[in-house]
Length: 198
Image (cartoon, rainbow, N blue to C red; front, top):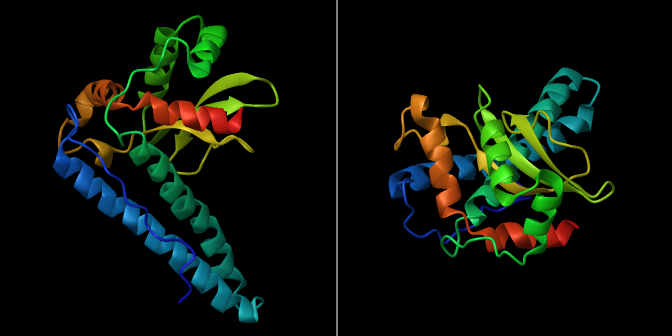
């Protein structure tokens, strides 16, 4: 079997409000996305040897691949944001300036992202930067893959599946999880993501 992708490792310190158990269980789910991304690509490779005969199976695998692959990549952004511990966004940062230009203040940006995160359902609250228009954009991505904005790389990814907080908060208190996420965020990682796409 060809290994197209390998799981990344993350050095995540103790977090406020998000338990070590929740992170450990969450990392196991991430490893599953990597495993099944590899599995699907290998299956596609095998089934395309007789693409006409296997057209239905190939179609279903191609649809499923986006779910597994985006799940892998979303989680890599998510976990990397905790590495190095919580760090505030510098008042001189280019990202903060972009937030202020877009929404008037850093606080307004956080409020907007929180609003997206509290969308009913399972998915992701994503912050993008659209280089072509020069705008920051917030977006709800259903599941792992439905609603990603074409051509844009997420600069911040907030996992809003219940598995991200189930050991720490009941579903009725997911806003507390969102608050904990922002408390633990290493904004220097997000800033670096922003700098690589602008």
